[in-house]
Image (cartoon, rainbow, N blue to C red; front, top):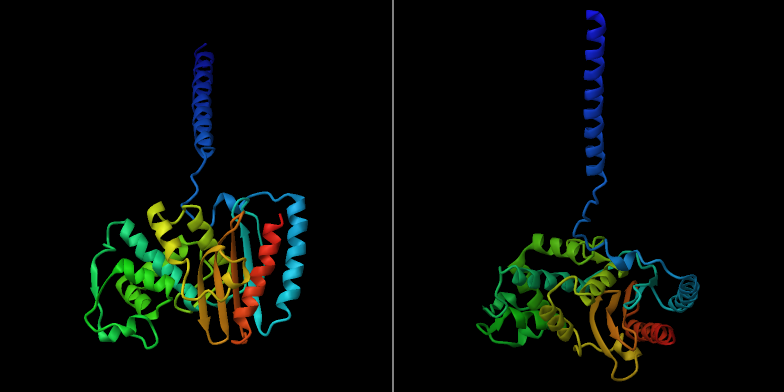
Length: 303
């Protein structure tokens, strides 16, 4: 009799333990099923997971083929990236290939300055006193007297609108390399290197896409930067291939054999265009970029 009581007791205890274990496993599995927030990562954006329509895929194939034919007529290697800013659909030729960044690298430096301002670490209206050692021959700032004062905001404008190497060097020294490397990540330029001066057409396109979509800066800073990149001192590349009066917010890059232009084209349907080159002919490159812009405009505005 005692033995049977013990068996009943053990059976009840076993049932209790089994029930407890089941609750624990259920709770554990429910915790595992809780959606994990995606990191604040510029590569994980809605625009990159849009499911393109078959018609868009077929159309983009045609565009890529036509662009490929055009690019093959020029000296050197050209890379192109295009993104429709309404649909997020993009296409390109050699868009993931590395090219010399040249002055395209001014974009993440400028971004880093704005980010420091938005964090409260830098006053954009604080004065900076120009030193003789700041000046690089041939730049706009080189024409000013030593001791001239400029706000950091004005140095951003010189860097963006004039592509001024003296101004950008001052901002670079103010920030340091680490802040610039961080801004490359924030700006979607993960395949770019500040130290090695390389980037890709798609990386530059990511920067402008995030800027346009208010994913980089607060609206006030975004609009200011877009303004600084409009009506620049170098309008002979992308803007030259577009109808007169078309608003373009863009940044050029110039280095031996490497000529580029990239930005936002505010047509009926705004889109991003990035054109980069290496081994290019300096006499041919500006008109080649203008012709590429004209071709892409015809693609995008005909839709």
